[in-house]
Image (cartoon, rainbow, N blue to C red; front, side, top):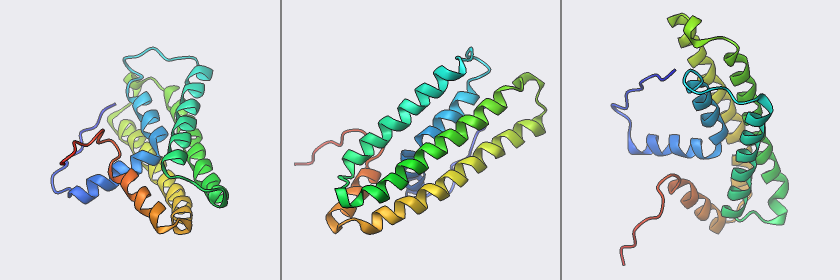
Length: 165
């Protein structure tokens, strides 16, 4: 189930904001893609799919922890961010499993749109939870850490940048 989304009128800042949101909610996007490809790919056993997604979430948590240079004093706030990421992944996994029970071929156009809406709403709800947790962590960061976090988010998905020197 792939739905075209027009990008007309989107600014660079909004596009960057969406990319940053994706940075922290990678499991949400992966789960949505998983459902989108359910028509063409045979389904993996539930335990295997959950393990793979859990591993991806844990890898992302570990990577961000390192990139953001979390200090021991910030661990409790970081743990809230990590838990929000895990909760988002678990909620999306549950929605994916629920939606995979219905054959895509048997869905009406309205049901297809409603499914898309449910995934979008789960994504928004997850981002609200994550944003709240991350704001608390960000507010506790030193100015240097904030600058670093801003760079981590600004460079997400861009790959290595060419040097201009």
